[in-house]
Length: 371
Ligand SMILES: C[S@@+](CC[C@H](N)C(=O)[O-])C[C@H]1O[C@@H](n2cnc3c(N)ncnc32)[C@H](O)[C@@H]1O
Image (tube, rainbow, N blue to C red):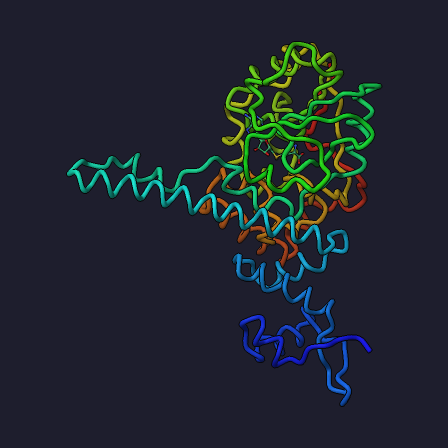
């Protein structure tokens, strides 16, 4: 007979009330599936494992709906959840350590009667973007097979591949010899076991000899680099072939290509204000550009992924895995989400975007530079 645990015992072990467990049961989040010899419902080992995930995500601050999405994702097994939870906790720890260090510095300065500048005070909260938001990345970001096929095709017969701004390893081809470069410790910590080796470095200064790789690839990362042109030059220097998935801001009216930025988040324009032109980037590496259509059911939760599934942008965990929302700030984010929510409820969004319903893929400005 399968081992089981009663609701009281599980509540005691998990440090939650029986009432909480009954609530999780009632909303279908964790339902006890075993039976005691007397016929009462009880928790199986699998149920306990799921409950552990639910309680851990709750403790990390996720809402019940977000937790339901996370634990209900059939593509994430127990080991993947453990990796994700580990990454989220490491991120917490790193941020807490950084805050403690900054507070210690400020206490020391005050004890010596020194003034602490506003910049120094804000330093307590400072962190590089992906060290701050990277923990939420793996909730929705993964390889989209159709985009991957286009990237891998562009890599040609390259055997050794450098993946710059590699993040958690999406789009890394498994049939080639990949080396990853990623500056964020939080992102590196979330790379799955068995992923390609990853070097802590930035694109602008790649720690490799000239022509060390058959190809260098960079996916959805160039807009984060401090100096995109310098980074692209570095890719050109270390590899014979360069493949870059990036964004086209050359086309007149590019801000209006996507309803989300056109109707709800015009601040997106300022996010890319200093971003080099596509032609300029292509020029640096001697590349041609290919359009990368985004399938309507795109598996990678990138900013444009949900163009035909607008309700997804109302979900906090979906937005947290897209850096744009953090960059525009909470005010713009809340306004955009509220306005979209209203338009979805009133039918205004559907009315305005009627033509999207029949499209299977959309060109929203993603381009593959191939050199
Ligand atoms: C949107 S993520 C993309 C990650 C991965 N390529 C993917 O497609 O899932 C952007 C990544 O670029 C990294 N990044 C930021 N600045 C960078 C720099 N100067 N050089 C290299 N990578 C950088 C971030 O840490 C983050 O992991």
